[in-house]
Amino acid sequence: MPRVGIRDLQDQTPRIVQDVYKNRTRYVILHHGRPVAVLIPVPVEEEPSEPRALPTGEQAASGDNGWAEMEALREEIGRSWRSEKTAVELISEQRR
Image: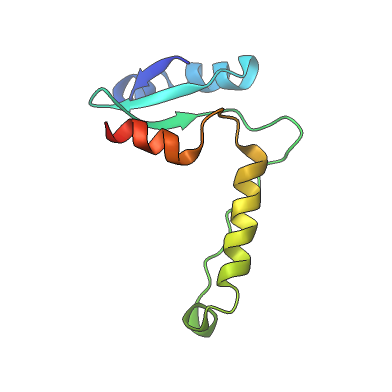
C-alpha cells in the first residue's frame, strides 16, 4: 500500500483520487511520518451512504435509539471491512 504525507496529499489530490478511483489503489496517509488514516476506494457494489444524523434532544438523553444505531454502524463497518487484521490489532500496531 503506497504511503503519502499530508503535504503531498494536498499537492497531488487529483492524481491520488484518480488512482484510487481507476486502479482501486489504497493509500496510507502519514502525518509527521506516522500513519493516521487509510484512503480506500468505495466498494463497487455499494453506493456511498449519506452520513447518519446524531440523535438530538430527548432521543439522545433517553438513549432510545442508541444501541440500535450502534448496531447498524457495526454492521455497516463489518460489510466494508477489507483488512485481514481486526481494528484492535491495527490500533495496537499504531500505538507501538
